[in-house]
Amino acid sequence: MSQGTNSVMATDHLAWLAGGSHIRLVRSGAGLWRASAGVGGLDLACVAGTEDSKPMVITTDTSDLPASVPAALREPLQRKLGVVHRLANPWLWDALTAAILRRVVRPPQARFLYRRWCLKHGTTLDSVYGNPAVVPGPERVLELTDAEFVTAGAKLHRKALQAAATAYLADAEVWASLEANKLVTALTSIHGVGPWSASAAAADFTGDYSVYPHADVAVRSWAHIIAPHEPWPDSDKKFEERWLRLAGPGSGAVHTLTLTTLTWGSHALLPTKK
Image (cartoon, rainbow, N blue to C red):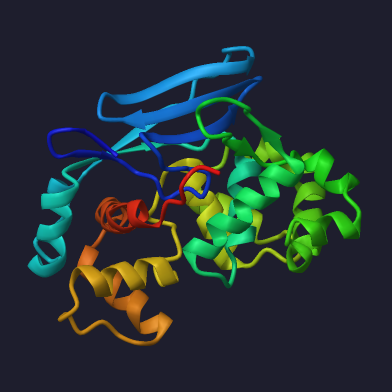
């Protein structure tokens, strides 16, 4: 959602809902916060618990995209987005859950599954703001029966979510202190959580999209749509290799290129509030 002249809020996270403004719930510390992104900017309100840890916003400027990025891709990103603001995900468990639920499905289906999972077993804010919801915590996930996974549409993700919940309860404090690339390595130690999910979760939690899985179907799809005449490789490996070459050395440019490409496309995928 536009925040002013040439400025947008990134809504790549599955929790965002669209309406008059973009709405989501986020758990931070001991508080549950409602985030509302509209033309006036981002409004954060603690709706439950305590305000001990206010969520942070990370800013990324498309003007930092290097000249090595083709103009066919770079210029639409700069023209449409300008400065991108992203609400950092303060709850690693949510980042990990979202990454697991996103596996092997396209973004629209992933958003539907994530919301169904939250509504069935998580915490919902009943209000005029469209009933945003957050995921069930790891303790709750370990209590769920097989049938409850089925009713939420998460049968295929049961083992990975349960393994992740057990590992999170044991290691979350250590994980939260790690740099992005080391967090990716730590998360891949979870049974059933592969490199793709670990990278997506780490990027969401740390805000560092240089570790995001750059061959992700969403990145590839939006790159094709934004710059359809570019010679994008068909294979995941070759696409990622070209993506990294376009960004050039260092992590800053690949972070900017990846996050802004996802931001460009995410607004068109947002579901209406139900």
